[in-house]
Image 1 (cartoon, rainbow, N blue to C red):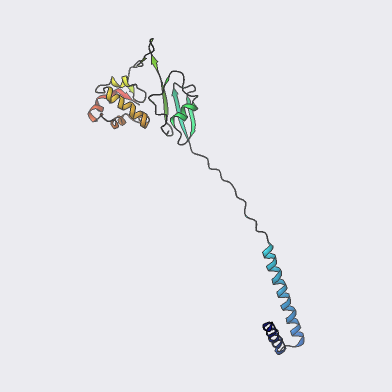
Image 2: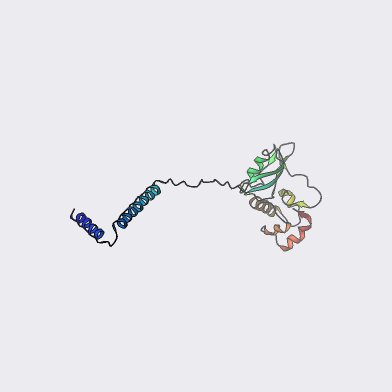
Length: 202
């Protein structure tokens, strides 16, 4: 309380000691009052002003797609659009699933697909007694992405062991892109590849 009285007395003495006329003091008092009033209104208005956040616009990013050609023993052969990182089983399902008699044993159904790839589903051939037999070997170069073990075994220098390795490689890594990729299979060196390269194709 004493501090307030001292402050009041100090302001009062300062006011009377000003070397202004009575009119000037009155004008100064009015001006000071207006400044305080407008400052108070500005502060109150600033505190009550509603801040509106800018609207959030959802941006949809389209998932990448790949094109896959599915042919062979499927119900609806054709080219299909699939999501990236789809697997072989997804492509076969997109083509209406495998047809009756399809042989999926030579296909890695869990392998991730790549854009522009072709999936060929073989059909199982059985004789009159129900035993599985080799398909008829067509004349001309053998398609190493579709050939059976017996067809590969018929190539010079490719026995049943290497033929099985070719099928296992194809199942794990997908179709061969070039015939030279056969050299990635264990047991097929430069000399052996030179012997069979004219008899195979992709």
